[in-house]
Length: 493
Image 1: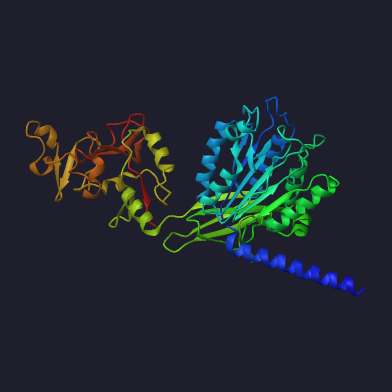
Image 2: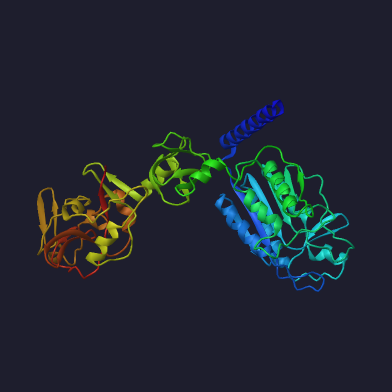
């Protein structure tokens, strides 16, 4: 009885340690970026290397599973040497911004002079010497991943089918000097990995996919795979693990029993932010947020914040797994950008579109344009009324439906332009074509026709307009179907 109690104590201590490791990982690394490159090669046409049934199936299944685990996945199937070289370079570039990197290959792999090579489709391999020039060396992949300064790297090689240039089973050779990297081989050196032709996945990848859903660290995960493959193959295939990693990584964070019992109503929520270290809070639940968090179906209130940035609030309705990307605007930068786009008229209490669209619209088109406008963080734009539009005049503009007129110091200069055709504008108005618009908006008026729509209509087809180059307004010169400019407005609140 005592040995049973002792075993139970060891089990509880181990379980408690696993939960503690997962809690530490969630606190430090749950939001880190994860990047993967997945390659599956089946359609070999070389006389020495047989066509394989499952590598493409394996690669597709691994790709989809890693996406579920919030990996940014690069994918290639039946890749030639050139295609593989190209995607490996892209992979290395992406790794620079990642915390964890993962490389998975399913297909033919060979060991030559104690170095491992992955065989592309179309490789001209007649003997072992050809392999060095026609294939991808695994140590190159490992070196590129190490150079990217990722926190932790994982290399999975389901690539030990057979070696036609050696007697015996062949297989891949163990690698050394892989600090910070875990390398998992589908089978030990000197043996062959099963393609498992009676099922849709190779034997190793079958157990790899199953293990990814368990909330255990990378070392325990691959030891579980090793045991599962060994048991199912009756000892004929034993995966090999070369572990140089420091620290933990969890493909799955939530408790397996809890996840299984709530599988139908739980969904994963991942929120990536720019900047990356912004704080994400779900304000209507008690649990602390982490990427990949399992939540019940429903609505959740979000708060995303960081010092020096404008805090964003929002709601997310969770009915399926969601992956959201949110960008925060810097406080000063956002303010400056918006100042370039809008002008606040303190006297009227209105906010105006500053840099207007140079296109001319019909009256209805102008109304639709304003209603759909969004500048900076501001919405609620509309076409201005005639009285609002008149507040932009540099001198008081007089409304009239029959005469061109300017009001100055209470006096109306009636028909100035018709009476003084040869004289032109008074000197103080003739220096610039835009003298009848307030100075804050001068830069946006450097075009010849300065006729602007208002939302006010005197008759069915006669909207009020303002002609800023002339200093007048009227409702008889244009119909709704003519074209003019528009400057949108909103209440400054």
